[in-house]
Image 1 (cartoon, one colour):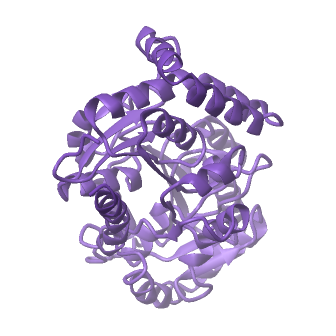
Image 2 (cartoon, helix red, strand yellow; image 1 turned 45 degrees about the vertical axis):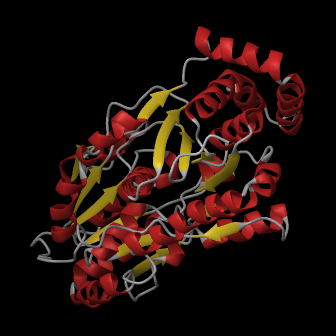
Length: 414
């Protein structure tokens, strides 16, 4: 096998880099550690990302165009060279998706991308192909690894990749050298699905505790509540807007700042207008982390009213929740997905039922009426994430997985 002086990994993901940071930080840290890393995206390259991610653009290429002549040429090449592997793998993927049009379209549509990834891995001598999400990126990585004779690993995160479809998920988890997931409940689900032989590691993404340092916290004089994330149904930001309107009807002060963009923006603006709080809801768009820090410092609480959608989509542990807690900002969230692994009821925030507008309005009214409650939660917030959510410490566990698998294979080939 063509092997360089250090482990090398080809990461398959959807878009990269993005305004999020968890995959980006992992790639950057692997690269800084001396591993040879490149990223292949299954969608068009992102043009919106954190300024800190600019160096990652050079590591990224796209296999997004399903009509790419080069990808189809790679597919034809693998069909000629390894027809039994390509046809058997494609058949397994198609059969697993037989009950889901969504999964079938994805598995079929990304076959040229899998051939392209395999060709890159073989030509450039990557040791491993890693699926950064458990659905189509991991399926592409799985098939590409079999075509190119490379090691395979994967990560699972939340509803979009673990719960909307589980077509071929059991098989991928069983075949992977290792699987990382950032929510304990997801790790338990994967172990139940794949069995005891699966190598599943529960590792929180964590946050940069130096950037989110908890310093200079100064709550604004007016109650300001903060929502951060994609303006999309799983986030439940419509519940926050409705709760703010209820708070106003009760004669309480309060403002809501929404950071992010997404398909629900028009609906959220309409809800604010219909609820009579259009002047109390600010839409700030996407912001870099450097501009988020002062918002965390001045807000009264982060509001994260996450929900599970009918198709299974849900949050894991939103990174912004841990960022806020690290800044000493309490969180008012829901008993959904993994939020309970970070937010402790009446210790560093509140946990409510999903879609409970009245309950969220009550929680907001409580802290507006008695801000001393927030002070107690704020004191506990940073301490609650220092150990489990230290990104640097948790990355050491991720790096050890890549390096251990590489060393074990190197030993086996001597």
